[in-house]
Image (cartoon, rainbow, N blue to C red):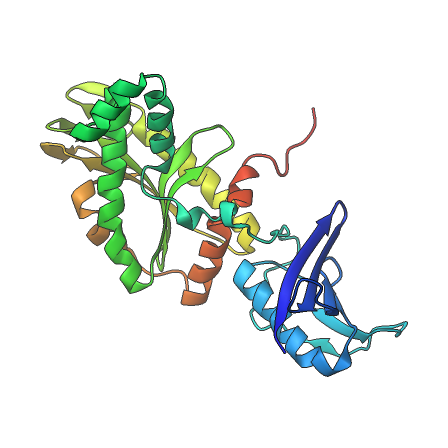
Length: 313
């Protein structure tokens, strides 16, 4: 008999129903995600239902209290605890809701944020202009935005080979401010927040606190450090263990990059990004890499950036 899992949520309640397949499939068991109690309604399907619940918790990354089982009609749940199949994070970790398709940031392509801006800008042109641009293979819009989009796409393509070695890669991670993180990479050395900077033919000089592009100063280092610091705090809170985050600036198209001083931010040639990241020592086990990725790919987590722990004035 095939069983299907159906999350159910209303304010103050979180449940997971395991039903028989079909449009009117009978419920065989359900999990109270707040208490961890599983109520079995059809005893002959108990083992199959528990397996489905474990599978869902594992794949969705949801933190559910240790599960106990009670049969329909029982007043008190038995003392026996059904062990979780994966190590549970420490107490106090926020509850991660089931991930809908639109919440999965792993579906984003490189440059996702800028691509949406470019498409919005294209709508300001007339139909004939848009058709002519499409036929000629040109993109319409602000040149700096198009250049930035190309830079993110180049870095994204260079990061792709890391996946074969078990690394996890996200692009265009949205932030509550409306900005995004160009790339978030998770691997044994921890998490990398990567900002792509496209400066074709430029001369780049990196100091202790500033980056100069053709002698013009940009606050790239400060911005990257702040972004990494907030990301580390966010992921540590949601994962339940310390998550190290390293800020990276990937410069694309520069004629020359000079490292004039040591900084807390690593500045690299975007073409060499895939070889630069694995050079750091491993600090996360494969299980923790998977856990961090499960958290990081969920749009809901990033929507909470800066919201939790705020004190009212």
